[in-house]
Amino acid sequence: MKKGFTKQNLDSLLISPPPFYRKSKSIWTEVESNFPPLGLADIAAYVRSKGYGVQIIDCSIVSPSVQAFDKYFKKNYVSLYDSIRFIGFTATTLEIKKA
Image 1: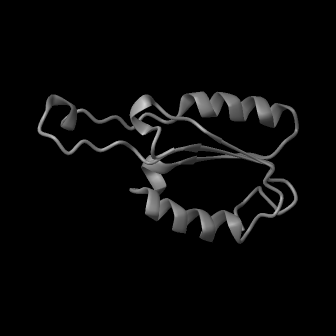
Image 2: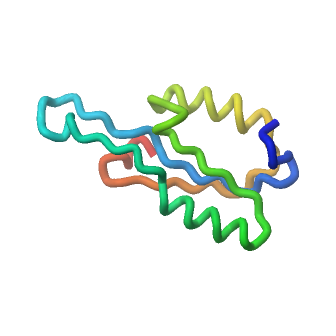
């Protein structure tokens, strides 16, 4: 079980989907960023201030693809927590399908 969370107190998950990878040879294939999802961090801070348990999943760190995320999510959340009441996603236009 993850430190700081129990089956009783993980109320919310905030998810940043797997990154968008470009296959074409353009300038955008060379541009990458590994900025943390600051918007989700802001929301998580507010949710915690209200006394709820929240965790952020940054898929650019834990999951290279949608299929890998499915396995990761089942192993680390579905089987461990039974109290998740809210799941939120963030996405840019390019990530909508993956989100």
